[in-house]
Length: 125
Image (tube, rainbow, N blue to C red; front, side, top):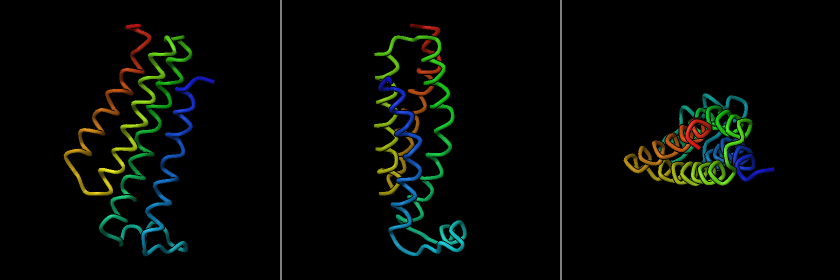
């Protein structure tokens, strides 16, 4: 199994980890979890929002890696871009949690560029 495919697993688990961090920070009602998270603020709410964004970023990233693997793009290219994606997404969550909006936007953009590069890699490698 390639490093890029392991990165898909990590990216797929990231929303679960970030949700756990959010729930551990304070007021959380397991009987009505979505409503309780909407009623929070501060870091707990930002972590919840980052959790949702992790779900949003995952499908295109996963599809891109799988497509690049199917088209046999050189492994080192996909692996490097996939690792960069995961690192940027971890930093994105940290920036989101600590309310660093500009850094968050740059990190989000960097991860998107990695995903686009993986997706298009069969055309240029």
